[in-house]
Length: 206
Image 1: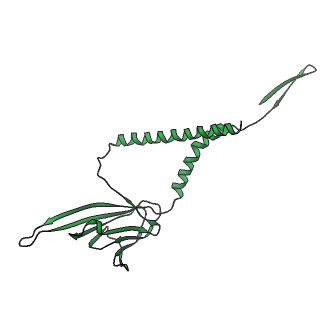
Image 2: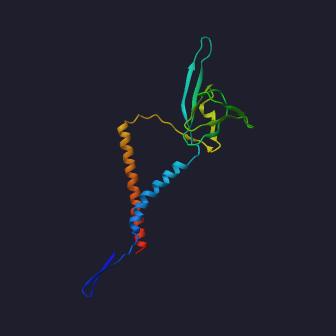
Image 3: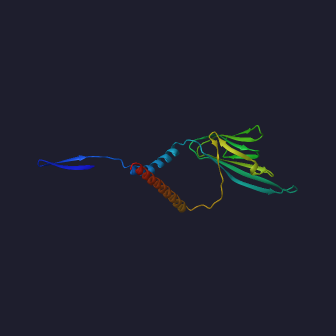
């Protein structure tokens, strides 16, 4: 804003000329903070796909020796499939090189398809958001967990398979502190990006 005072024949006239210019540096700083948050919110809010995850629940082997019979081993393992997305997962398929005795918990509708190559597919028509099933297998040696399951997929694509490792439970206050540090680091990173963007914008506009 420019202010000019003029005197004309004993009176004082004040004229003001306003000039607005956008502070691109300030704009870039705020944009660097706001835009990533809006993008993250939009992606999480409008991503309506199913999000299936799967992991090996447990694997075990028990040696049995019935009276008057030779010793043998009974093996077992379970596969957990969970829909962690916002949309129902249609036609969840669990592929098997071979299909031993099994159970599905909780009880749900399924169908067994035999494929042309002699393998089997367990077809579950629907998993609603948040639903989880556990398929438990029971079989005898020399069969092992490695030659039972082959793949897990749905109409939305292949399922993400997680490797679950036992770990000690973190104290709640420590978990909150960890998330606070992560959030602080994220904000610091975004601010640094905003500062860099502001520098280049300022340099570009002289």
